[in-house]
Image 1 (cartoon, one colour):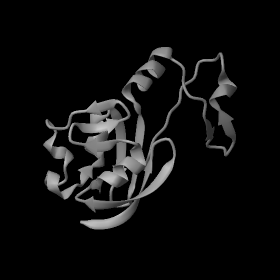
Image 2 (cartoon, one colour):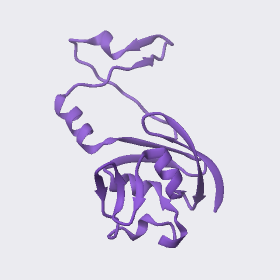
Image 3 (tube, rainbow, N blue to C red):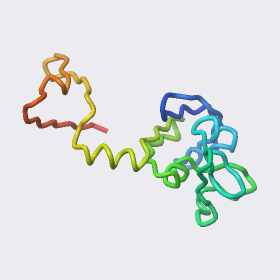
Length: 141
């Protein structure tokens, strides 16, 4: 286990104390609430009036509930979010909630974005409004 300062990105980046352990990014209750707004309570993970029971998720706790450390990737699953976690680098990104993703997919509208072409030119998705598009992307990693 290695203690580090991790950057959690949800609505914006926030740095919190964390522990990297075997590919997992572990947070204590204070860091979890600071980063996500979700508090660990006896009834489960809570944010405002919404609580998600955690009794059926023993993998939520890193080693045992008494350590107070929770696995951020498991938290993300419990609250209906996708997560990309690189524990060694101390970075995690939490995606939008499932209901928001579903609404966006149902609307068939893509977020506007800007990308660089192979010729080095900047183009935005909006530049092609009203025309059919095919986007090909890859990553070498």
